[in-house]
Image (cartoon, rainbow, N blue to C red; front, side):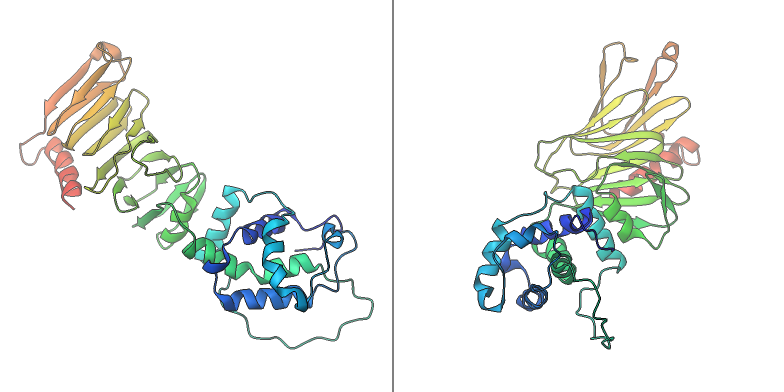
Length: 328
C-alpha cells in the first residue's frame, strides 16, 4: 500500500480498529510481543501529518501502558462487516500468512528515504494475529459450509468446485447463488441443510442469526431447492419467497420448484404453510407426503395431491430424490 500524507488508507484504519477490539487474553502472547516490538521500533519515525503525534510518545519503557492506550484511543471507525468478510476470505485463500516470515536480507537505506508510517507498520505487522483471533478465538455466529460438485455463481462471481471454502465465506453477504452444473450443498451450523439442483437460483440472506425467533428469508427465483432442518434446529421460521407465493417452514423437509408454469411445493416431513394472492382463501397448509402446485395462470387454480407411487413415472422419480435427500 502506498503512503498517504493524510493518514492510513481506509482499509488500514479498519484493520487497526479490528485490532483494537481484540481481547488481550484471546491472542497468542508471542504475536503480541512481535506487535509490540514492531510498534516500539517504529515509534521514533512517525509521519508529520499523523494524528498520533499528539498522543504521548510510546517506548519500550511504557509497554504496560500500550494495551490500555490501544483500547481507549481509537482513531478509526468500526470496521465494516464486509471488511471482516474480506479478512476471512484472505485467510481462507492463504493470502495472509499466519506465521512470522523468515528475515530477509537488509538492503542499504538511503539517507533521504522518507520516514516510515509507524501506525501502518504496526497494523500490518499484527494482521496475522488479527485474522487468527477474528477467525478462531472470538465468539463466532454459526457460519455457512458449502460442498460443490461443479461451478457456481454468487452475486455475479464464479466459484469452481475446488473453492467451496471461499464460497462459504462469500455467503456471509447477501447475494443470489446459482448452480451452473451439478447440485450445490449448503449447511448452516449443521442444523439447516439446503441443496440447489442444476439451474436453481436462490437468493440467500447472508449470515442469519439462529436465535429461535428471527425469520430466515430466502428467495427462489428459478429452479428447485431442497431444505431440511435437523432436530437441533432452534426453530427460526424460514420463509421462501417465489414469484407466485411465500412458503413458511417450521422444522421440516421439503422441495420447492419454480418454473414457467408456477410454484410446486412437495413436503417430505412435517408440514408447511403457503400464502399467495393466487389462493382463493389466501393461504394453504400442505401436509407430509403431499404436493401442492400453484399455477402462475390464476384461471388454472391449484393442484393438491399425494406423492406419486407409480414406479418409473417422472413424478415418482421427482419425489424419490427428495426423500433420499431427507433421509441423508
